[in-house]
Amino acid sequence: MADPQPDTFASPDFVRAGPPVSVKELDRVGREKWSRVVCLVPEARSGKGHTFAARGPYIIPLAHLRAGADRGSKDAWRFFTHPAKVFPPEAAFFNAPAAPASRGCLGARLAAKTPGGWRLYDEVGAQIEGSEPVAESHAGALGVLRHRALGGAQPLEPAWAPDILELDLGLLELFRLLGALLSANDPRPVALDVLALLGSPGLERFAGEVFDEEDRSALQAVAAAEGLDVVALRATARRFRVDLLDFAKIVEVKDGRGRQAIAELLEEYNAFEAQHGPKIRELAEQIAAADVELAAVKQKILQLQKDEANRSRITKMFSRGGQSLAELKAAGVHAIRTKRALEASYAEIPGYDRLRGLSDRVKRFQADVQAVHALAGKLVELNVGQPQLRIMKELAAKVTGKDDAARAALKAYDLRMRADVLPRVLHAYSLTAYVLRRPDALSRGHSLRSVQRVNTLARHLVEYFRFARYGPKTLGEAFDESWGQVLQLEARLP
Image (tube, rainbow, N blue to C red; front, side):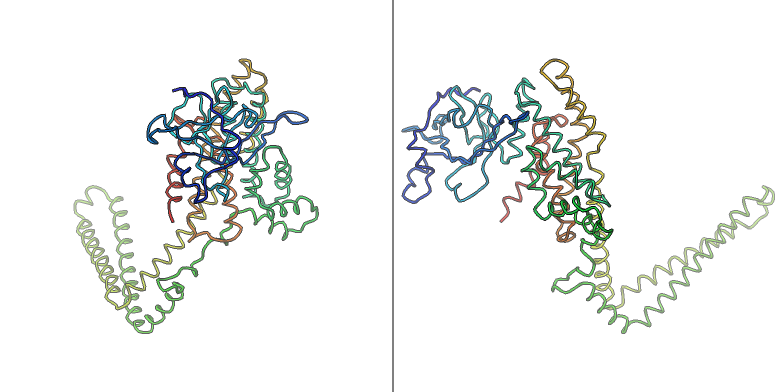
């Protein structure tokens, strides 16, 4: 429903006072709401198109309690309006990261245009007509602008809508190149493309969180060098790949006392062998003899069945083959039971269960590590390919103007996004999030950093495309119902 409250502007002295943070200002805590936000504003570039500039952070008053009002009543708070000269009409907001300056500040949740400017709310379920969410990140605020330009009631209306499409394609190209680095034997061509993309307008912040200074230095060194030897190329390529050598080894498995399980296993095996070696060898020989007897019985049964198949009906009538087959089956059952009894005898040897438990634990650990490595290796398969991006670029080029042809091209572009791209992005995040939550398998090396890069960019892409349709829901809703709940639970952990 619409908010009937008229525009109310905070006085300059009220704004300068800032949020109540000192003991002397405790009386203000229950009467004022403050927030610390950054706004993104589309700005025309000197050449062509627009860029999305961040302004702030701003510490601003959200609301004050009406005199004599009950804090729990529906209309207890009067929310301030911030004039357009402070926040332009095309701004999108996100909450500034926590900092000492954030003391006394709430997280804003909604932003709504008013006749006099912008009004921010800390209420989630206010259902204020025309309101938009206040994001929690730079990527999320860009996602609000994207939805306003491409997914709103009047798509393509803003003059900067083509620049949002350009940002779409730039981010997806960065996602593709990040996947290409995972499998590149010669990183030079990919490094050149990545460096060219990192200088594109709008991608600087994304790139800065995905590639650190060491990553960029490595890419620049490879791109600038023409005569690198094979060893140097492999070393640089390994920096951006997922290598089994970086995953945990059997020798790193620890027992309850912090000792290497493999060392303990070997020590106990040697002691066990010294004490029970003759008994173990005797059982092994008897089991081997039972295996030989069982194999001979199987062979005789197969030969007898073959001979029976070649005999005539009259010959079978006077044949004792049926009785011979029954005798052979009885001998086979006896051999199986003998083998099982011998195998059960192992458990009666003192210390055998302990030794077998350690051995099974080591084997299971290595199997788990290899499974996690195999999952991390599947990141290459989730890469957005050049054919998909080429089609999307062709469709984006047709989105010119605001006529029916442009809207049809945008609809086709959106369908491609939903079918070819968004499932890969969500799957890439799920896979990397699972791998990063297995520090017992991957806790070091370039492989860890490679997985973190994909996870960081995939998370930004989820926030950026949050309002894009994803089946019957939006991508953000699908994410919140899966990994979003996991992140919320982790945030509550001490």
